[in-house]
Amino acid sequence: MSKTDWIQQEIDGLKSQGLYNTIRTIGSPQGAWLIVDGKKVLNFCSNNYLGLANHPTLTAAAKQATDTMGVGPAAVRSIAGTMTLHVELEKRLAQFKGVEAAITFQSGFTANLATIPALVGKEDVIFSDRLNHASIIDGCRLSGAKIIAYEHNDVKSLEEQIQANLKNYRRALIITDGVFSMDGDIAPLPDIYEVAKKYDILLMVDDAHGEGVLGKGGRGIVDHFDLHGKVDVEVGTFSKAFGVVGGVVAGKSVIIEWLRQRGRPFLFSSAMTVPDTAACLAAVDLLEDSTQLVDKLWENAKYFKAEMKNLGFNTGVSETPITPIMLGEAPLAQQFSRELFEAGVFAMSIGFPTVPQGKARIRVMISAAHSKDDLDKGLEAFKSVGKKLGVI
Ligand SMILES: *Cc1c(COP(=O)(O)O)cnc(C)c1O
Image: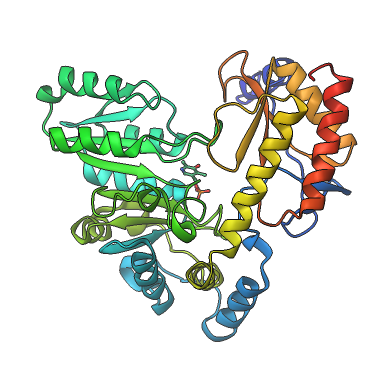
């Protein structure tokens, strides 16, 4: 017996249950087409909503910045790692989103880990949508606050939980994803805001899949619902529509100032690198200059969804470019994904426990990088595999 035998047993268990993650390797830049494990395939998997991950404006900005400012920040933000580029990006993001202030983090994940424990602690309560992202769940756990899940996108359930529990705690926080990444549905933020206002509770939304996608020119879910000044904390990521990597928290300046004092990943982990930061600044420039990429994304998403419905597929309840193709059982979804790959289309199957039993699906991520011809090629592959497997 060795000390690591149990790990091998766990891994073998995952493999025998079909739950083992096989990780494919991408041998090309991100874009509409990828080289995956040596094969050229149409990309329906990336969160590269606007095609910025390999956009010439962003890569040029990253190159130019490394030539003048180097690559690394070489210290945590609070010691010697805050560079003019970070401050510039935070100022530009606050303007872009129409908030008082913004603070950047290494990722959306660390933005949640920084923010939630800074706002609530052991004596407090968090009301959290049942389907919130893993980084929200981990941030909630780190805070030590009592976590009460309400039913997904169900404002009545949220209010019932508040009425039953609020009185037992010092302070409270309501947290929801803006766009839910598995179904592509949008949180009913105006109704959630009304409840937050009624009970005077801080409101936080994680807009990772809405940043650069929802709202005017991609300004996010708060702009989409015209809730400016009403949501206390907006978390975002640069790893999806922005095409880079990094995270942001935007909102009232007093909260942002507090995160500079108490956000642990800000205080104890180094910042975004120089090229990341410069590329994000270039992304803000692009989004402020024109809504063209955001418009193209939505045009593509509408076309693809409508054609999939015409073919007879069930595309679920999505209201965004995230397009789930509902298939039911996980083995069917896995087989569908394999057949698509054979046909030159890279689209992931998602099954239990990421989504409930019996709700396995293929998730198609539409991008502004796709041409109409790309989408038609994808539709053709879905049609032939769907017929072969008896789905349509
Ligand atoms: C993707 C995602 C994150 C993590 O973002 P990263 O910047 O990749 O760490 C956080 N929250 C939600 C809701 C997400 O979808």
